[in-house]
Image (cartoon, rainbow, N blue to C red; front, top):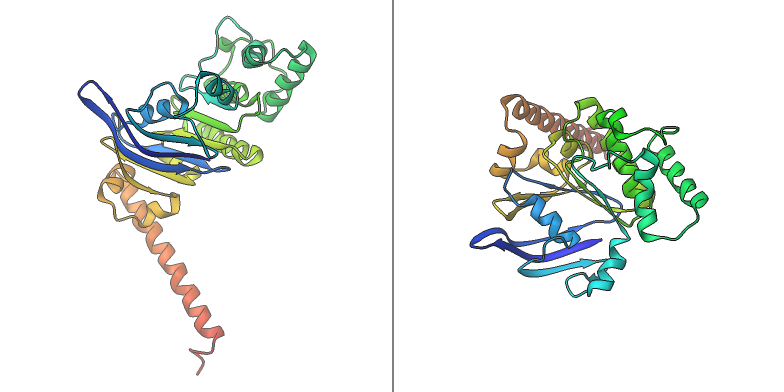
Length: 274
């Protein structure tokens, strides 16, 4: 679990985050959404220590990250995996070398043991046998999966993903979403995802933080969004007429199920028997 309280971050006179508090839950896909410039990326960089908040506290599993010294933060970062927006693979390295990079950095394991870890995560992301390929030989979706493999190779407790579906077609995006969700549950990680992808929001949004101009505007899950009356959230999620119609249909559908359940309960209790 990652908890942050009353986070404030500014650059000069420009305030980017103001009094933001939320809890990122373990075993769930925690999404940070909002328009460009709303503070999503800055929030994520504060959480991993790339930026220092001006005010507020960040807590990892009950321990204050804000109060940690350099050595303590180094230890914690070994428990953090990161999937970058552009995958950030090293072009001059093979897939195997890219995934082995964090193992080389943080461990002194023999090569055979490191290779075993590489092959295990490649199997987990359904990319068996591509060890010797270079990034230039991979599709966009394959690069994302290699990036995920590298992010989880040290079996982290925390996984951060920055726009994981950027540049991918809708079908491949769904594959990446499902993979991240499955891995999150399988390893019981606290996964934090920055995204503009509304399909991701509606498919894997188990705990969502919506930022508006650097402030917490709304939080909930993908089901809550359907019934939300927050005008700013609705304007962001259901920006087009088509998506607004889809929301209205889902609401009517859900209401119909509620009415059907109520009728069934009344019948079972004898209230409508004649």
